[in-house]
Length: 128
Length: 365
Image (cartoon, rainbow over all chains, first blue to last red; front, side, top):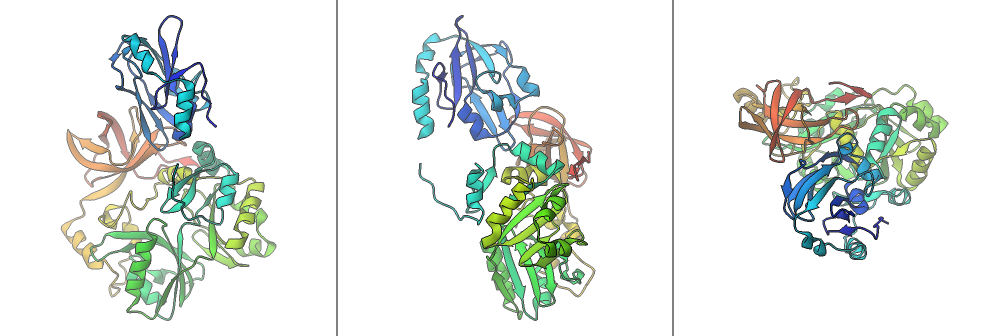
């Protein structure tokens, strides 16, 4: 059974979002997503300082078999990317919520955070 | 969640117990991986891994015309097979020279050949083989009495021999590559689809599960279809449906070596089409690609030279052995040493190489 931490927010396309104390957000893909993908071999991250709108395709995670787009859960500016993933993309498999985080954003429309779903709702979605 | 149950091999329960991720493959419920396909891949390159390939179709061709039938049906010439157990790889072509399937044929005796074809092409293969059999005194019959296990890797033979009976061990002792022996109901062939040494073993259905467990105890790692695909691609072996199909000539799919022209009086199906292709000039070939920029090669990506699309990739992956993305593409024979690939809207450079990347654990590029 997949791990779905209760302190995170989610979107249905299997990204998780953590709202940090300073108002920025950290984003990655869920344990369930990495299980579906299998061994991850390549990650393409957005450029720092680039601006994205909610639902933009902004990154790519590729497993041995297929490529998967990562969507922006909210609008904002990319402030940091996890450069570790360029050399060790398999970190997403081993630690999807911690060392395998993908990028950080500064939200431009904080109200969009209200559209994210909680752990219980996400858990129900992936069990269906 | 609704899903239609597929056909199950004799080893299905073994896969479930080993926590395999099961997927549909040509109507069969098959293991995709048992956790990490990359670990499974490395097990085959460095030690020993095993695959359930029971979904592949075994066809027995028997009767007094067995040889002349296969000499007509296949582009390669079964006349090369003179020793019992000897195997031959061949394409089975249609009249237009397109590839209906690729297969391995084993010589048992002059009136009995055993043919192993792909799972995904089973129905059309059987229909075609039966149709062509009408003019010959042969019987073409599917044999479903066996499970099939491929054990592959540098230690595959040694580890498998540990679990064979003493009679079987004696029988495989001097067996060369691309040979098979029939021993105590097992049909043990030194063939494979990974670029490593090993066996493909037909095991009586009711003994398959036990035999699989014995191999596991001997240290052979269960491997799924996903690792099978990265291994065959590194080895530069064609996958039916990717590198070739009924619309593709074997002359444009690196299968020219499987067409036997020596016996000019032999009229195999597709011969006249291939002859006219040769006359008018074969334009394309398959090449290997090694990505030089970032990304992963996949099938059906555009190959671009001087801003012009000149071909398409047929397969691609991230090579677990080379830790670089590799692929295969069909391009004009005049291709140079480098191309660009259109990967997700961006042009990424790739080096053109022979379509064989890893053999016997060693990088070839």
